[in-house]
Every structure is written in structure tokens, then in C-alpha cells.
Image (cartoon, rainbow, N blue to C red; front, side, top):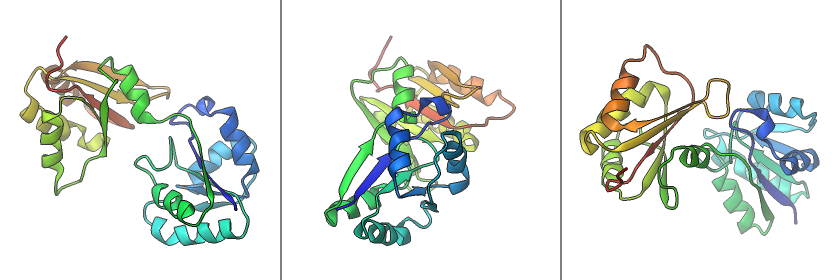
Length: 227
């Protein structure tokens, strides 16, 4: 049977890719990319010349069958996202499940991801944590924030830059002033920023900014954590 490779790629700095990831990409027959234009920068940088196809959240259900046909035909397929590990808030789960169901080998190629990178840099407890990913845009959002406020373990949340102020305000509403929070922005990139403080202070600081850009991970301590 053929092999489906789930390959982690850099979350910013291209130097963070592993030797094994480069070697695996070079031996794949075809590479499924979240965005072929974004991935072309990485592939060109490491002189990887392989056919690519798009595989993103809007076509994932339709493309899984095509990927299975490639595997059934004896081709080895690699899946990469724009950044980090496929399947973590990015396409990958459906393809991995289908490959298992059809008897193909699924091989993960580990590497960087924003969630664990942020949580270990936060200085907040990381022996146990819950990964929330992106919260629902509307329905269920407040319920999830309430659950984060009540959680006794560290929470990891991906937040869009245009939603960060509203998220902090709502979190402040449920958590109060003293909850510890770390905001990691643009990890591994030129303007990397790791801002850590209690919730009242960090909310005030970020509301004072003229604008917020870049990829953001928010780490929220458990409700009983103190320093």
C-alpha cells in the first residue's frame, strides 16, 4: 500500500523545517497544499520540485477521494499546511482517517506548531493544557469563553488579529482582573512578540494599540493559578 505523509512545516522562520521533512517532501509523488502559492515559497527555497494540488478547508471533503485514488494508484502523497502541523486547525484529519480506513500507511513528520511553541514560551503551566483552536465566530463563542474562564488548566486559543480586543474584553468579563495571560504574536518571525501579564493590564495595553496584525496565540492560565 502507499504512504500518506502528514508533514509539519515552519510557522514563520523557514530554518525551522526538519531535515526529515525536506527529505520526505522530495520523495513524495505529489504534495497536497493548503495554498499552493504559499507552499511554493517553501518548496522553491529547498529546491523541491514536485507536483502540487490545493487541499484546503473549502475543498477538503471533495479532495479526499482524489487523494485516496492517488494512494490506491501507488503514489505517495504528502500533506502540508501554510504553517505548522496539518490537522491542527488546518485540513488533514479527513485524509488521515480515510487513508487508515483504506489500509494505507499514515506517517506523521513532526515539527513546529504554534500552539506548543506559544505555551512553552508563556511561562504558564504546560504539564496539562487544553487546545481550543479558533473559537466559533458567533454561535457558541461566549459559551466556550465561559468554559475557558472556569477551566483549572491552561488554555491555548488561536485568535485573529481583528478579534483580539473583543476576545480580551469578553475574557476579562468572565475571568476578572488577575487571571494570567500570555499573547504570542508572529512566532519565529522578524517581529515576534511575547507579552505576558495579568488580564486587566494586558487588555488595557492591547486596547491602546493603534492596530494589531499577524498570527496570534493566546495562553490563559487555569482559574486557580497564582504567582
